[in-house]
Amino acid sequence: MTSQKLIRRALVVWIILCLLSSVLLYAEQIRRQFWERDREFTALFSGISAVLTQNESVLPLLNGDEDLTALRKKFPQILALEKTHDRALDAARVEPLGDEQYWLYNPWRQIRVRIDLRPLLTAAHEFSPLHINLSATASEPSTAFWHWQRDFPQHTQPFTLTADAEPRWLNIRWILFPLLFLGWAGIVAVGAGVVWQRLQRLNAERRAWYYQHARLNTLGEITAGIVHEINQPLTAAQTWIQGAQRQLGQDNPAAVSHALDAAQVQTQRIGELLARFREHVVQEKVTLSEVDLAECWQHVGNLLEHERRNEHITVSHHFPPEAARVQADRLWLEQVLHNLLSNAIQAQQENARGWVHITSQRQNEVIEIIMTDGGPGFSPEALENAFMPFYSGREKGIGLGMTLTESLMLRMNGSITLGNAPQGGAKIVLQLEPGKGAAHD
Image (cartoon, rainbow, N blue to C red; front, side, top):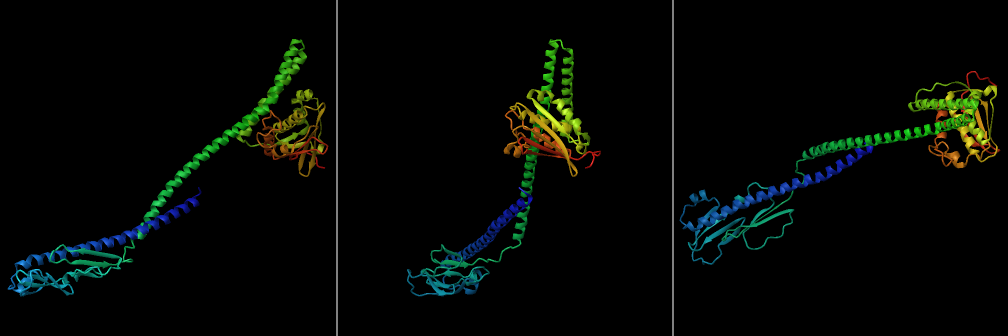
């Protein structure tokens, strides 16, 4: 995951969290308004209920002759005190007068008091309206957002307190929202940082695993290449040694000496190849020098003399003076030509009389080395995949010879092109820089 993608995802998460938490914060503030109104309604109900309880407590103690002024000092809700005549005992105890005023009767003492509850309802509150229903008739249904209704427990004053209120939608603490957004921003930033560090750690582990895997693959390729390159001189050395043993048994010292000399040349080549492979692995700086193609080719032919004779392969060459010297690493160029000649010999194992011819020509500022043979040539698949690692046209081939050949040519500032000759057989063209002493056309 890239940093930009992580930032975009963190931004989306932050927006979602801000929206959800904003809705919850807004709903919580509205809910708090409700509970404030509810507590206020409860407080008003308790205060009015206490006054109604006073009314029921003091009324049985009055006889109608008390001083109203002194009575109001203790019970300010009482506006008047009057005596009644012949009021039935089962008559109504409450007679509403409107505006939260009513007469409260005591038929046993034939007195009544006028009660005014308006001062209790005019205190500061957030209800609209706040009303005490003094009659037994039901009030009209409320259309307010919030509605409270509660019956008083006093037996002689069975009133109902009702109240309505609307939320103050815009009267909230807006400062909390920026603080909330900043808080979520910090949390998301910290979370994104933790995720980014974890992703970086995982990516580092993946890269380390990849590089380790690549190094192992490279090491495997190089090892297989070493095996591929030293297998032929090692086989040749073994063949010469076996020949020397046979000649020794036939008491032919001259042949024995010749075979051991040839085996020594092959073992020396193995040592040189291993040294060059080390240079190839560590990527040491390449120092090119002027190489004589005829000498180089002669050396390669000598190394593969045994294989040429066994397969009856005729090898010829022609290097004109103007194209006889190139800028290259001698051993690397020998290795390239050795690989190509060995492949050409193996491709003509079924031929009774095979041949390989190599020539050179100068084209502008490069020397072209052209090798042709009498074999079957390259198949379309081989032309496309010959330089791919581990691709081989032979059943027992490792598939690294042409890969290493291309690598060596590139390191010598050259190139290699595969094709088929018009008359049949393979045609391989190497291009290298001309030697400094090469003659011009």
